[in-house]
Image 1 (tube, rainbow, N blue to C red):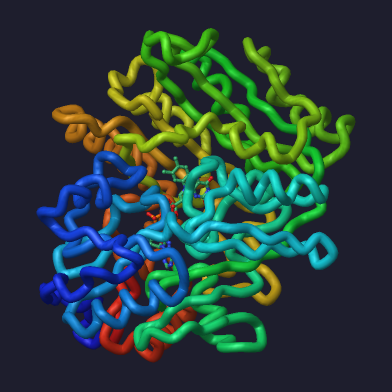
Image 2 (cartoon, rainbow, N blue to C red; image 1 turned 120 degrees about the vertical axis):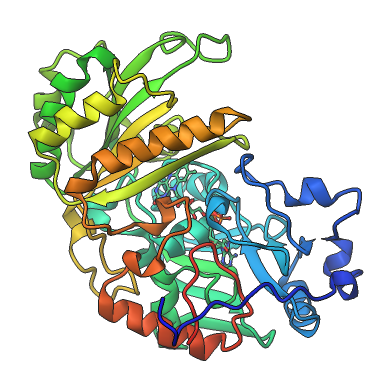
Length: 465
Ligand SMILES: Cc1cc2nc3c(=O)[nH]c(=O)nc-3n(C[C@H](O)[C@H](O)[C@H](O)COP(=O)(O)OP(=O)(O)OC[C@H]3O[C@@H](n4cnc5c(N)ncnc54)[C@H](O)[C@@H]3O)c2cc1C
């Protein structure tokens, strides 16, 4: 960050003037409901905002934004909290929780969804499926639609259809002066460009979003499973296969360690496994041909087959309850055999790693690697693989988890240029690493124009000049 760019400090105003706003949905430190109100999906994250607001409609959002500004407080919008780890100090900010604003409207003829900011994916995906349409949701059903979509959005369709951000057709947001602005290709085109990848919270509180739905009723999808001891053999095949696979294929490679507890179903209970899952947008014969090199490795479980598109929402088995997890990530440019050897060393069966989610590689490239026509600030992802290392952050285990995650990311550093996909980045990083140089300069300019006093606080914040 240069001296011309800065982030506002915690202003530290008095939140008591907010009382009575948001239909009574305001919780201040010391209130009975404050601790429940500040708890998010990310249970390991201890957010301590100056106040928490639960607005029910646009007018209540605007009233809280104006009152916060008048009181010298900042405003931090929050979806589910899946990326709450990266927020800085919130002691001078109102945490604006959008869970009270839900609703989905589908226009099947226009193939378009209009969604309120607090909505989660299951309602959208199921409604769209009734019309034979699919949304570009991610692997977790309960990530917030706004944070996921405006931060990028890598779905199981991503290598065919690109980032979810570039299927967004409009956003409505309350800006720093408390007015409601619609940004689309015809209205506020600069702001429309900036939010699609630059994230909503750098510019305002997004109250509704509209995006294109895609005519996908089924996919050839599922998972292949091996014992973790097979990791070297499987990764040696998957990494070059993933680099060459057609755009119709989007997969993930993971090391998973399941504890021996009754909540984990057989055959996963107590096992350390390699899991490759994903989806192929092709007919059965073609999909089987694409997957043949992986099936040759004789997985002990193979569930790949024709499934309804809506079932992809739960393919990855991501937790749907608040979870005390945490991790580290980076974008990788290549994954040669030396990277395979090293990853198995630091995250394989004999690595001594404490990580429950040892390591994950998401297959990028395809449409994700080409500038999307008419794209926003994040036109493509600058890497071939997304590395994610994750584990549980409970009590004393948290330090060990982060140390083990850092070991995995550091071991893969020779294959990275330090580029980041910020949606997966859970620690505060230099946000310019998420954009190309010209897009970053534009984002700085637009942030300064739209939010000159830095009222809004994002997790990965674009500074104002
Ligand atoms: C288990 C898990 C699985 C995931 N799977 C995927 C995946 O498959 N693909 C993928 O691309 N990513 C994935 N992610 C990353 C995910 O995209 C990010 O965590 C994303 O930020 C989640 O959005 P959220 O709104 O739920 O998060 P939050 O932490 O609530 O918010 C993230 C950012 O968005 C801003 N924001 C949220 N709502 C609003 C709003 N209404 N107005 C303005 N700003 C807002 C917040 O201020 C914050 O800056 C996953 C993350 C986890 C933990």
